[in-house]
Length: 110
Image (cartoon, rainbow, N blue to C red; front, side, top):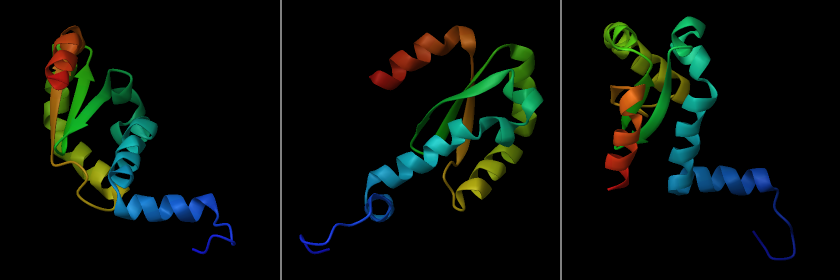
């Protein structure tokens, strides 16, 4: 782009999305944005994404019962997420009880 001709912000962001870590972060943010559609309305009421690190999605779950249910749905959920992204955005998922969320955050900050 020349200095005398302005470039539209969408073109700049599209280029940055392809060439920087910003693109991966924006794609990951879609998981939060579309969580209800990805997990299903009923399931989404009982769990939510917490973080992604090294392709591993951490999901906070309200109870052991829902954690058990999610363990059966894990691969289907990963498939939905990766289909939405159009690539292998996440390779695994870990479920953490909401009561352990502070400990999880502390571990991730280390």
